Length: 143
Image (tube, rainbow, N blue to C red; front, side, top):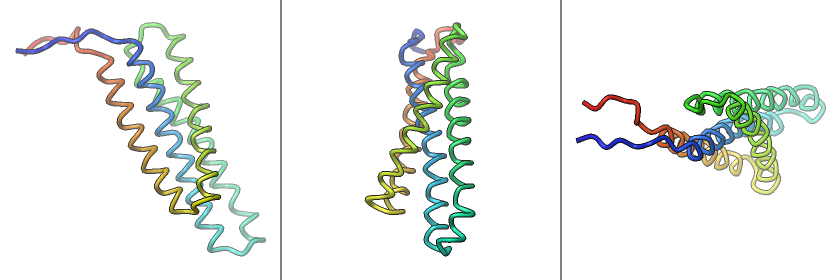
């Protein structure tokens, strides 16, 4: 016996938003880990020339991954305006989560960044599951 669940737009939207924030923030945190490794291995003059590149790539990846993930997860919403707002908020939220990782780097070093990366990925996975549950299975055929 199959239980049918109705679509929950709030859970779908918030889950999509949180998934974009989690995975996008993980991208920026990973870029900060690369920059921290370069900072430890290179001389200060060489670091200033090369370390900006991973951070710029990380910000672009955070905005891209956050927005695309939220857009993809919210595809069950009929209103394209809502999907766009969710994607834009996820992109901004991913940058904010990534910038919070810079505080962890200052206080806890690269180990704090690694923990923050794992927490961000776990948050993104849980949020994705929440968004999938929010889609419901009302339109699917029972076996």
